Image 1: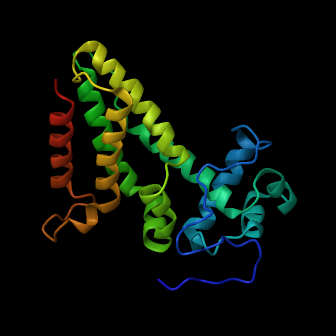
Image 2: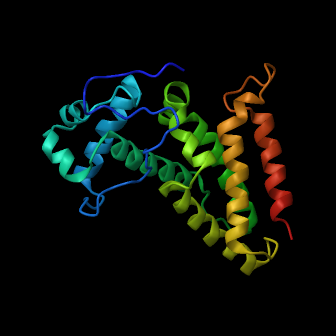
Image 3: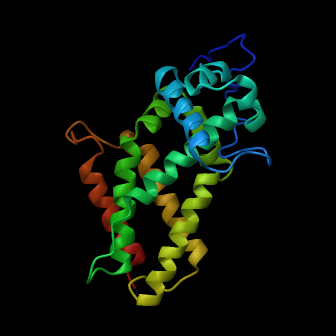
Length: 225
């Protein structure tokens, strides 16, 4: 992929190795989540969906959000930190939204498996994820090869809570909770990021339904006592 170079100093620093992109990065003086913060992140999302991350500038975001560039700079140092916060917000919303509601007679293992499979499907259908994979896939490499991001840490915490509940009701096999959570995240990350490389033409539905069935079986067998 040929890097897109810009003279605008506000542009995303599109180094091919993704160095310097920090998901969820925010200055210590950054704002708490609220209406103003969400308005800015909504503007970032609109910019990225329109032109991709590398072509998005602080000027574009400020214009869409109806704020000054200096207002943005007081909260975020650059586009990459804005996009990092956007990714964290969107990915956590997908994960929490995919979790099924507790129902009578439904054990915790079933809830975890249903939630993870639904999460993979929803994640792959998410417009922001699709745009990044199609236009700026290098943004995801640090979180696959090098380090965990803020959204991954949040997802691990959600998984750990669910696993502890499964240990308590006996539906999840006993084990080291943090290690189990990381293993589960590794599995669902691989299905999320690489599913289309393993999907053949006959698997015509959007997210490879047959493979999601395989994911369900893997998770069930992994978690069963």
